[in-house]
Length: 246
Image 1 (cartoon, helix red, strand yellow):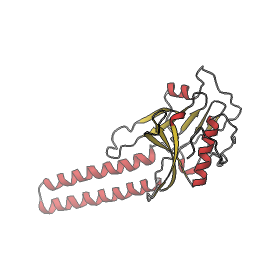
Image 2 (cartoon, helix red, strand yellow):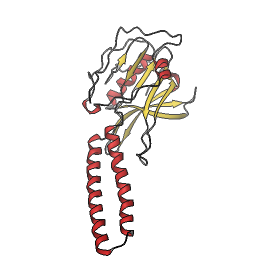
Image 3 (cartoon, rainbow, N blue to C red):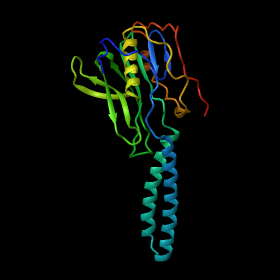
Image 4 (cartoon, helix red, strand yellow):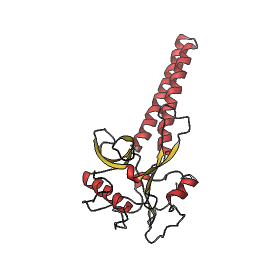
């Protein structure tokens, strides 16, 4: 993609918009999970647990000995952990993991929810990071993944003044034209140039309901929404997603 300080030749356009004012902007990100597949996986795992438990009990009654039951108990614990992971992703993982851009500080802030597939019983951490906009480069990729494949826009965080990538995070997925328009919008907004006040889509996507992201840490929330001198935004243009009741 063009560097963020270069002229943008594609008309700017957003897909979705949480909030936008004169200092900062927040856009939502879809986590890229097949939510219905999580429920299906949990149901299938539960069916296997019931089958294995009954089978183990019948074998124990026929052959005797506690060793068989211990083996099946270990297997059931593994399957229960797998089912817990599916349910945790579906019912508790935030589906909106937003990005904030602060034009006065020239920084971009990411909200990420890190799942641990191997341990559904642990607390899955939330991380909020800040990057200098000057170190961000846009990359468009194509993924052939079965469930989350397609074109994706990534932000590559490079060492200052170089193209040595130290970290990447996904901004959005969509068609090449959409991603080019989105990147153009972000770059122009951060340069203080005019951009449309409205996003293409209004409100909140149905497949993101009902869970928004967790609250931002207080210090990062304050930094990402104010200017370096503590200036408060002028909310002449602000679009907020409606709250949903679970």
